[in-house]
Image (cartoon, rainbow, N blue to C red):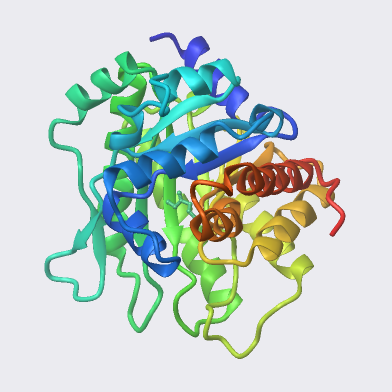
Length: 334
Ligand code: 13P
């Protein structure tokens, strides 16, 4: 696969005013989201819910790509159209989550490492045949007492780089996601320091493993105080801290950065992204790759009556996409 093709895909993922919808929850995670709204976690309910999301009218106006879970990439609409084709017809690039989740890091209680490298080359080849053009791998970093350890950061960024190199070998743009969690009572300065160290380690590992940054997208967490921190901060402080951290650790050649929402409210996730873009120009397009902040309101409404609420739930999905698309331009108004 040529770097030109990878770079073209990466640029399309962060096209002006567009972002990514993350609907790649594993069957376990979507089960938790369904349980909270009283929906049974059956394969057909998962299919019907993802069909509602992916067939949202005019979704491609604000959405450049969607990250799917393995099962979803193999599923079709009720009328038998494969989701990958639905997406292509809507101008939405199919993406796929390829990591196999986090597991306890031996010797480091409380810390985790993301697994999924075994057999990844073969899986990526199949995903390409099924239509995927980018992939996602999420590493998780906890902040706590004596955490994160240097070892935890190193093993996770090493794995991210191995995954990224394999993606590029097989024609998929790697979306590299080192998520620094919001859980805890740490302050924003601690989050800044940890995020900077993690990003530096990540870009070192990508360089050491010959990953071409022109064909790579970073999925970053924002620099925020922990959820349990007494000192919460204003939107502009989150935006300026996140920007400073990214500018100090992320090479300018990267085609774009997208953010995860990580448990922020819908409004906060949009406001923070909007503020960062208002503070531009920035070295890269800054956009979104939200899961919960794109879906939670629509899921709630759909779950009340899945047979009859599809169109109304889709209006919510479209509105969230439009708001976040405007935030990606720094043009959102609350
Ligand atoms: P959230 O936006 O809900 O954090 O999910 C994004 C994602 O894909 C995490 O891996």
